[in-house]
Image (spheres, rainbow, N blue to C red):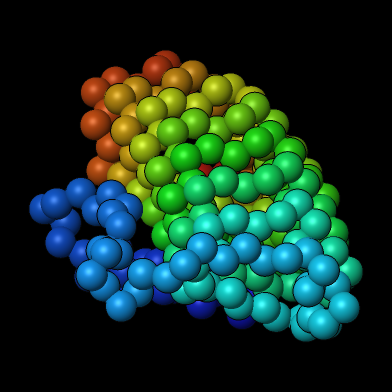
Length: 226
């Protein structure tokens, strides 16, 4: 497993283990008007990225970005790691990361994202790890992960997802770990995981699930942990 991915998985497991399991840990804003962490809105101008950033790894986490432009990362063709966690982001633009063909790890946790377009992750054909946990996401667009054929780790825990369609995870043929912990699922719909033939770990804990469809886990022949 890629070192960055291994560290991300370990960090997430430790954070869950140390939480108060008697209470749901939905993403909550920890900023107040009187806090020293209140900043003015900042947007990454696209003209400042391609000419100055020739990095393999780039962390922009814990910055008050609020939004990113669709061309913010143009020219970063060697970038393999990008963290935009805890940046107050409320949305992801279409084709936001299409100019990052070498990207392996993308972290978008601890933001305020409510939804994302179906083409948000277009072009990330070698991406291995994607974290979208601790946002306010309510649904997953059909085909949103179609290009992510090398993705092995996907975390959507700590959101407000109520259900997913049969095509939500289309294309994720290499996915090994899927975390859907602490959402708002009341049922596990039929065949929603059918295409995830490499999946070994599926986490659905801490949802208000009251029923499981007859074909809910069809096709998960590699699953070892549920």
